[in-house]
Image (cartoon, rainbow, N blue to C red; front, side):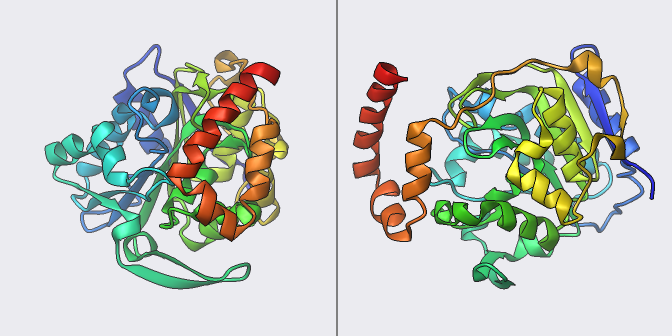
Length: 320
């Protein structure tokens, strides 16, 4: 069996469109889709906050470049995302410029949480629901942002699909997260993965960290390999992230360095970053989130959550 291939290109010394064109050619996207192909693009829009969108979310520039390249082949393009715990996708679309983008190119932007749902059997949960449009797409593209994560060490291609689960309270399933992310990867396989490392986030990601500014994009058809290579790019051990390691163990993709052929100068683009630390507050949140009752009654209740968060912020400043 040949090696999995991942491409890395700097956008500091070339236009983003040129880098995306290289990824499309490298992954043979033009030969994989036709005029009638239904393409679904999943960016990472994990916050509606305007002040954090440039570090926490997939850049609008990358989303637009991918849409332009696909639009040259097929008009059947949909951008999809699921509601967050404390915001709607519509808010995220508005604040991230997605609505203006879809108007310019005549494509669609949908909220997976409001779409027609189809129940799918699952070994861990018994069953869970997904948007029919997600399940029935012909060509699924994931566009994650390069970020550290306080719970999972790293969030990239595999973790980006968690936003395809249309429940706002999907936090209650975090205790099964590693396995469920692998189940989603099997359910709707990624056909193209492009990691947005133009900015990215380090520190207490996926929302509360600060910029990496790696100025690169990485691409491939193996989302595990793209995740593993992206982790190595910023000095993280791919085996330290449970869902990336498990996906490799289940044969979803390659994780070992010797099994991945890289087109591009990874050494040149390496960036030293501050990893995310799972501090006492994150550990407590994850512990209480294991209870569906506590999650729905307290954690998902803004009237209770925000006052508690204010106290936690003050305690963090006092005791670290």
